[in-house]
Image (cartoon, rainbow, N blue to C red; front, side):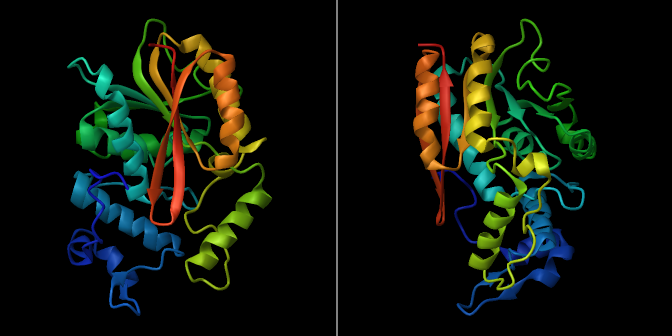
Length: 286
């Protein structure tokens, strides 16, 4: 985990239960004498997130529709801290402005980016339901209402087109792409995850997720390839293009595509516990 990530230490469940009493029924002491929750239970993760957002980020009202992706906050915060490192060389004293591709109903990246560093954010999504839910999360919290904008991407074949206005500039874009190629692959991965968490039945998607959040044609490799190709047309309007890459074996294809468009790129390794991932970042500036 990034050294500045405030979630390095174990959760203080005494404090978290006070700010969100709905978390209390899910807290128990495991065989090692540590307080925790069962992370295979979606509502337990939801209530933990509500408590974390309230306690650490002063976000009092946050929720997601049933069966939508409920992201673990420490890992999502890590992306933001690494982005800050990436941006150190280009900060000019003004407010950083970022673009989140596929913001989802949870709105988590824009919220964390704003609450940790005060960045202004725009989130986009192809799902109307996700956009409506995301907007509710922003409107419900006055501290966010003039800091985060949520936009509908009406063209499912485009990523940046139709979202970035003429003469508009973003210091960075970010994305957590749907990395499975099919629903079948997504459910297999969820089964393995839940088994690893100790749920022997291995049923359900413990962090939730809709189709467009978890899988797309070609998986993450094809999605990122599309993003790279389209980034050429917006190279003067985005400082750093970035995207999570969950599968290391996809990097070779991604590098080849980036070299084809003469982009400058770097890979940022991330790790939370046993989970390893990475951010691919590219720019057209020296």
